[in-house]
Image (cartoon, rainbow over all chains, first blue to last red; front, side, top):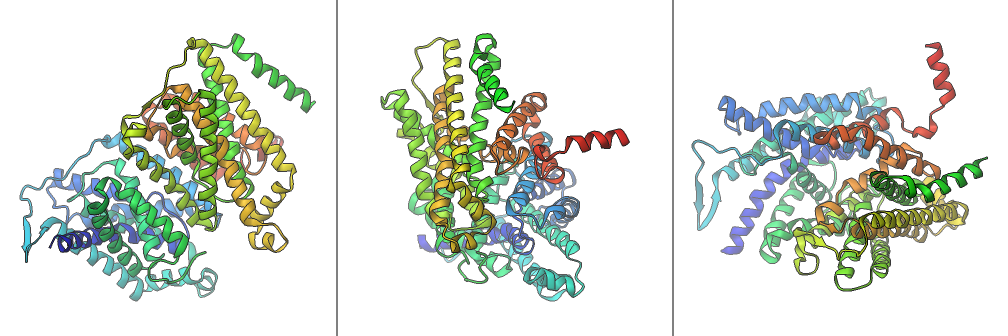
Length: 288
Length: 308
């Protein structure tokens, strides 16, 4: 019973993780850019949800579109204004650029909102669901459900829409896509913006569960790294699988080694995966 | 001419503590530290072209190895060497493992190492004091004498790093590393043993940093995991090298000096926005000065200003 409960906890956590990582994975896979800003984008999403609730009384699950819209604009501006200029440069250049942007934006957040931890406390808190002896907090369940829904929506956009097909085409072969009339730079900016949208949505979902602080951005980023490497790059199902794996791994790891070793455990898993299976669990498309 | 200038600079550095106040000495010590960090990163990042973010890991490891050894009663001088050795051994193992990765994967793997080490230090409270930090034995020296001692020590370490950089630059090792940077597969084909060369470069990027970490621990007398494993120790050397010019010897040194000047003159005025200003500088650097200040053509700049 205990193990089943832990497994369920892990899966619920994993759904959220998938949502955290899917935008990051998309940007990495399509643009070949590691977006260090991703964690900060998530935090901005959380703050949007927080203030929408405090000032306007909008439930965090309903403020997702607001957070998504804000981050769409922000991310689009960053990519088309700055990152596009160096997008073809070596890894070090793009990585350092997003690192610099992250230092700046994160510091702005600290100045604006202080580094204290805040929490969305609902007036009518959601209850706890008990099913066959397994308890699941309803807020987590709702967040996970929405997270999976959003991830599925992204999958559908990539799979069925014109823009989505263009993004996939650029990911497969940039030159060929350009020859077919795809405006590569514009697709880059859109992809980055979609990454921002997913981060913003994840942020507002998370505001229900985790405390909010600018200092949380690095842990979120770390999780995104691990999930991408576990699941393989740039594919939505990969991020989903990676997120669920990490969620379950962390839950059982907390039981076996204690929760204080969660970071160490996940990063060691990351390094092991990089060394022995850099293509991820599904083994699709390696990238050296 | 150039040689005379260098000699003059050396004499100046040696005699400076006679006239400078403690603030200046402290600043100069940090400058030496930055030179060591920048030149060290240059071995792996500048020469070999591997985007390593492991500097913070080596720095923290050296600091903690030196500190814990001293706490166990090892003499200070020996503890420093042990700190450097520890960083070198760790870099050997780590390098053999992760240098097989390329591009982003290498960057990420090297980036998370410092976090893992920090968590390990945090959880081994008995040995390292965990999150409470570690107090080092206090030197039986006057404050002034102590400041001068660490100034000269850091200077010697910086000289050692420069000497190593010059040697590597002239040796076939430097040539091989440049080959790897240009095209690793081709380098392998023409007989450069890329694995060994890269690992040596990685060790070189660790040993002086670990040493500097051990100095740092003794210098400030108190270290804690969040301080010495700070990710900024990984980012700053990269910024310095990019400020100067990657792959050269004078580039990282000039970059370190310019960086320190900016740090002192510009953003000590932004106490709550320290990291933000650093971020702005990084962004400006990448977008407008991708080849560093050494690449600036001052004559053209002057001509442009005259015409404009």
